[in-house]
Length: 330
Image (cartoon, rainbow, N blue to C red; front, side, top):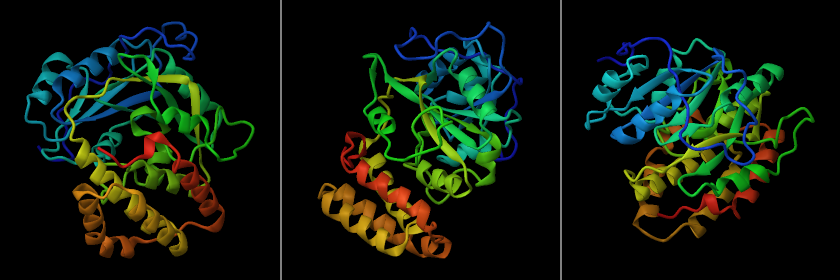
């Protein structure tokens, strides 16, 4: 099936989560009525059990959001299972692995003002989508809100939460939480118009740390991003993952983002820092080789940010050097 012609089920989905309400999450989930302001977008590939669990939890959410799933070329029967068990979900089958661009394809079909990104191994806490929409309604220059991430089954916070909570960036007093310089696609509700204004995720990056470039382009347009601890999403990491390949892609994309948007002195400094500090193994060598192979297209599209934004990116870079969630290991 072509990328632009989805397998169409019905328009809306009922969604939720099996975990009980976590400490610090939204206090209450409204009056039980559906909330038509947000569509949930999920990308998946060969994770049928995890995706079906996520869709079951989304179906139970009090907000009853519409759901769009892009299947990135699964060979394990995922799309057939979705079509059979969740006929209300809009299922897109581009026929190949689009990576993060699968979210761009899904957002083409979104007609709500907000889009909630969700991985196939994450699910939103009841009431969080409603609260996120309320915050985005109230603040027109707020492009995205990122939720607190709870790891299941332990119930502990993901290590990246500390980085979000302790963001070094300053923001206006009206922000509902700390100002962010990036976001996590598996845990963020975004203004649909803002996402489209920067053309979504860059196809060159494909997957792995793809949020950083999109976030920077949003900040450049005057939008704000915020971490909101009263929003919660649960994450039960899929066992079906290649952690080494994820590290290769993440490091490659970090380098590409650096060369695309940072002024040359900052780009050189960050490249040198990464070369000195990443593990000295084959995966790191592969990442640098892939990054160098893409240098021609990166230089053609290079568009450094202005000094004010560069100062913010430099502050984030310094803070992330001490984050346990930013180690290129695995």
